[in-house]
Length: 111
Length: 115
Image (cartoon, rainbow over all chains, first blue to last red):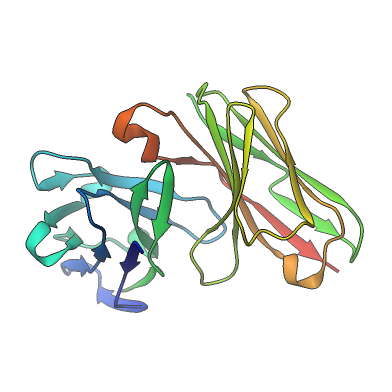
């Protein structure tokens, strides 16, 4: 069965530091991959997506992610974190119109 | 701007009192989804509509029902809310065109409290 794993439940980084959130998936075919962000009490906002082509994808708010088929990973990165990036981040695989979510990673940002 | 709208944003109901949550969209997407999200968890798909075709997830309790009177609107009915149904309810849409079928657009959610 398809699955998505986000190994880190909670990450704390200092403002201005770089960030990498990990995501591993289990999926037989070429996956459709997504990163969503959720601020407290809000819905999910799409940060970026990978369907095909260039394995390094750029998203909104300065985020990027790299698809590595050999590692079954789609890690999210940002070179310099801002306090407003504190939120919950979900990695997801899309299949047949349904999303399979990871457990989420809560990001805290220290001043 | 095209968007997914959920009303109300906050809903308080009493144990056992039926409640209806509303979702509307201006994206003209064929597919609409309802998710339940409890604290510190990923969203859990309850059901979805592909046009008028209703697709229930196997583990969605019978207490949850849905209606889609037209393309723009979709409703979630909870017939007899229990304390365990207190959660954030998210509506999402997608358009069934190739890979984009998998890209979902979410509303802001309705926070349901059951007293």
